[in-house]
Image 1 (cartoon, rainbow, N blue to C red):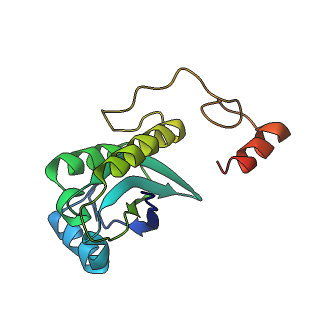
Image 2: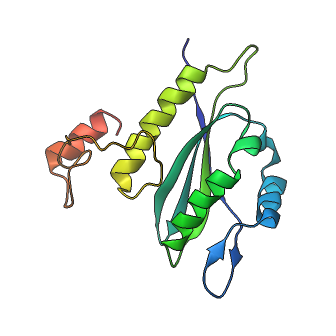
Image 3: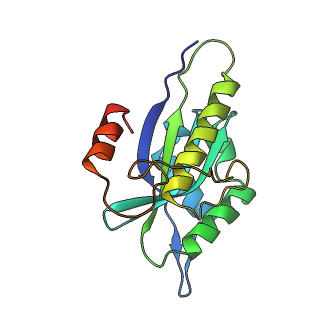
Length: 167
């Protein structure tokens, strides 16, 4: 069975700005769900990140097989987000949801797990300091200018390959 996930985001995550840094409080979590109530009922994968300037940086990738509302702001996840926020002096925290389609019957958990594994690898290529613990063994190979290929401009061949492969 083919599962097509839909992307929702970036959704701004409210936060408390203190004198010494930022944190996500219970009130901020409530405010987030007030603005994104429908998303809370969905399931799939999510990426917590930060938007600074014109860029987005992933900080943590997770999956929610019950519902996003039940799983993305648990104590364990909040500690990861706080750690990520502490490393960035500027920028706004954001959340992306990759939602599984609503069907009769159970969620295809193997597809959600495959997506999470894929997202962790892609996020790790974008941010080597990704805060996930599982699934973050860095691959020992890369494609210069395409994936894990180091810094610098991609060659015209690498750009064409990325376009062909929809990367």
